[in-house]
Length: 114
Image (cartoon, rainbow, N blue to C red; front, side, top):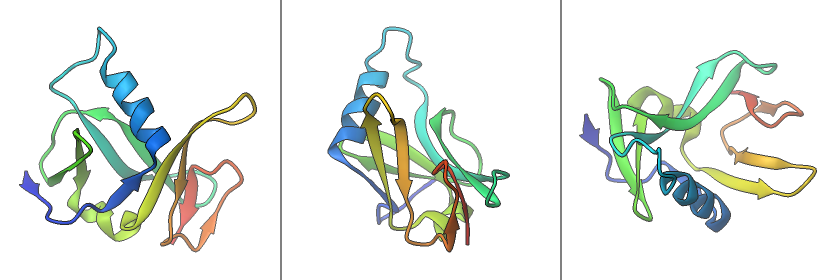
């Protein structure tokens, strides 16, 4: 695993607060880091990945406000400059992704094309 010099994605204050809340849960596995990435699928071709995971080969590490993050080095191409937000409202609850690299996004906000 290598460390990136530049942070590839940003998080809003709301997203940071929610991630830190999840990390403070009593059953949180402290060995895991926040994985930010993509996988094939979804209605627009690719789906965002955001969740806690173990470090894997090909990962690069970065830290955002004390949150240890990992990303497969090949995913930076799709995600560099993306902003992750947390929506806590009744109608819209969950993480949202604002990706300047996406040529097309779907209505659910978790799938995109480049």
